[in-house]
Image 1 (tube, rainbow, N blue to C red):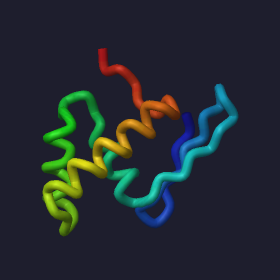
Image 2 (spheres, helix red, strand yellow):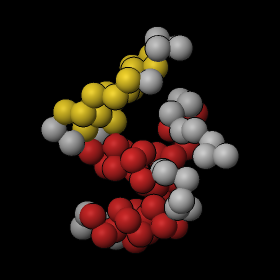
Image 3 (spheres, rainbow, N blue to C red):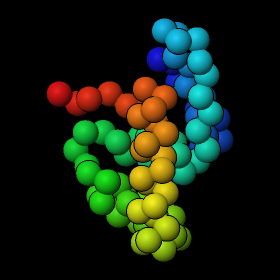
Length: 79
């Protein structure tokens, strides 16, 4: 994958599939935070710390974005 960061957002090109994915600022933050050391709760905590967002909204957003990232094969199993 090739990553291009633009004004806090990201474009990710997957050479295998030929797909390009655009991540807005919060989706890019969540993607970067999915580093294999945090569970969804810890990612939501990090989102709350970084942005002025309610806990419930952060948890829902993290679940949605992680699901989309996984469906698009943008997450790698850390093992």
